[in-house]
Amino acid sequence: MIAPPPSERNPGRSLHRFANPGRFLRLSGAVLPWLAVSGAVSLAIGLTWGLFFAPADWQQGDAVRIMYVHVPAAWLASAGYFGLALCSLLSLVWRHPLADLAAVEIGPVGAGFTALCLLTGSIWGKPMWGAWWVWDARLTSVLVLFFLYLGHIALVRAFDDPVRGYRAGAILALIGIVNLPIIKFSVDWWNTLHQPATISFTGAPTMYVGMLWPLLLASVGYTLVFAAIVMARTRAAVMERRMRVLLMARADEVAA
Amino acid sequence: MTHLPYIAAAYALGVAVPVTYAVAAFLRMRTAQRRLAAIDPRANRPGAGARRQAR
Image (cartoon, rainbow over all chains, first blue to last red; front, top):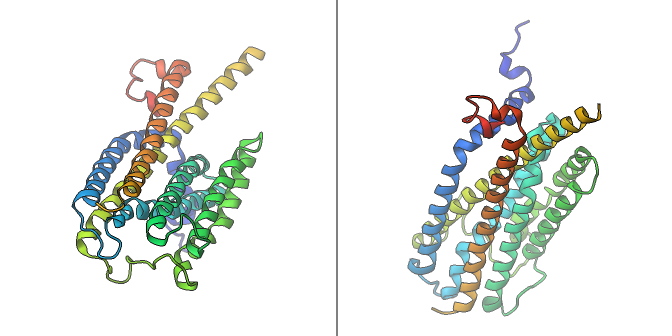
């Protein structure tokens, strides 16, 4: 019988190459400054372009400029949750130790961007729909996503044993992923006030190119900044864990 | 510019949220780095300066 190549024998083992905290800190230390600077520059250009140079919409007027904040925040609310669920899967299936820490650190950042999406949507809705809030399928499903984030944040911190908290949070995150397709397709499945998607992976965008470019730049900028924040928080969490281990070892030595 | 207060509020939030998270993450990382360097015996070995934060 011919044995598979080593890389295919156990897919979980190759993932554990990146579970080494020292290797993660070295890699992230090199990547983080580039990620943060490129994100900040893209975001500054995208937002400035959207605010001052992109054209106003013929129906919505200048209120359409809120899109350059709202759409990237909405994308990151869902993408952040997908990242959270992916880390949870890595944690539950392969017991990847960094995945637990990353999941814990993604939660508050994802919740912040979901809140930003809800708030900017509300600010956009008032002049366009005449209401700060409507119980529309898209808005309600994003509100549920926000509560899922809050539930995850509370659950992972609710146990004295952090590993039990990580497991419980991972299960919640995996169950909650069912909400992502509901958010995506809510505008197609139900009659909603919220407009359908104007950008998709399969079709051509139905947006004027002068609006599309600043939107893409702002989206890339927010995404890079989001990744940089999560990476910085995860680095801090790795160092804090090492500190706890060292202090416990010292306490044991003193007690012995 | 029409709807100026709404646009200004949205952009203020759009800048404040990532900046707040970024500053908090940077401060937390720097504090953890400093405290770890103070207690980690491996960080005080000769030639460990370049690798200090990786441990």
